Image (cartoon, rainbow, N blue to C red; front, side, top):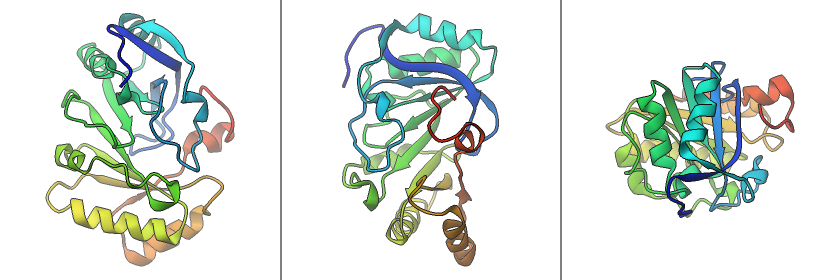
Length: 218
């Protein structure tokens, strides 16, 4: 846990189109916090692992509000490693923002404001980090929340189906399946999903299609 009272270490703050989740295509403000406890093989945000710049929480909020948008995504890295992340989320919600929190599911979600929409990334076997999940986090999900699986292989796809079947019995949170960029052809994943009649959403990273895979700040 990164502990720094009233201060956040930030990789970038920007406005763009939401490229993932069921909110894909909507304008969002993004706060990318620095630091991650995982090293997934397909990670596309390795630049958020360390460094970053320290900002007072209120300055982060002011920069977000200045965009004039109604929605914010707090992401990383793993944003919940920072002690002040829940306070940032609460403050943004109090200022009238609709807030998504993207988390890798390895940090307890119990400290998050219940008004936030949780987007929990469950790591599949090909990530190399599938054994680090906090499985109790599933108990804290609601029907407003979404669970994302990045799929690199048929094994990952089978794993995602097993996890969803095991934990999605009572609360019908949304399921997002995303082909790992450069590792699995989207049409292959789409074919598996259609063939199984899977109750899940195929997710392509819209920002990469619009601006290219290597562009930052979008």
